[in-house]
Amino acid sequence: MKNLLAITLSITVLVFTPSFSFSQASNVQQPDLHKLLKEKGIEVVNRSVTLINDNSRFGISLDEKDGDGLAWIKHIGFSDGVVEFDVKGKDIQGQSFVGLAFHGKDNNTFDAIYLRPFNFKSSDIVRRGHCVQYISHPVYTWDKLRTDFPNKYENTIEPSPDPDLWVHVRIVVANPKISVFINENVQPSLMVEKLTDRTSGTLGFFVGNGSGGKFANLKISAKK
Image (cartoon, rainbow, N blue to C red; front, side, top):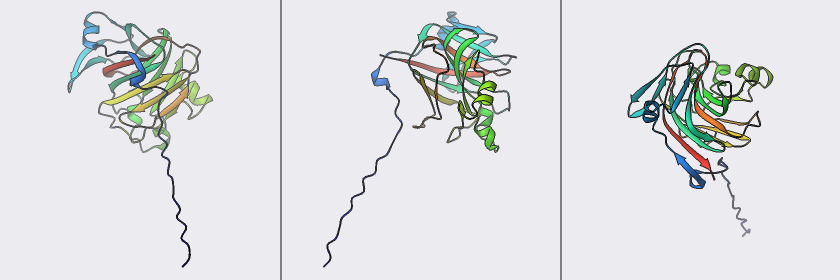
């Protein structure tokens, strides 16, 4: 009888993990957006803001105007860490750019991550690649990045969220790397390196030209 050679196959599953987790984080803050707005703890730029209660999401809504809009959270600085929030845009092409600004120096100088919900379910493969975007104003606007570094600072989101529903966003900033996770995805939808040497600053919600948006459930976890 021939000898049988038993071969054991070892399978390694690689899963992306951020450079730190909530268990390693300190100074976890969950600002009450309703209370902040009522107590003038939110500085709104080029938008009007209202309180919302949408399916138990107590947050704020920014209206639509020409130019970018911001809602800075006062008295909360941010450097490295994790920022989570829920956001709701709409499925109208070119009219929904919703996300987070961070490492802000002033109303024109900040980094941001934002979504384009109207591209989530597009049948156009090019548009599908423009679902989540990183920018660094004032130099690195979306159009400059798309021209100079095509497909590097924006990406698709898989599986695609429903563009008419709330989306959960988790942004991990571990300077110089930024990773963006959507809903319950364990793999990042976007991974980039910062295009500025700013490592701290203010943070707040961002809406792009002509866009409004709804925001709720903000959670900020600073790295130790």
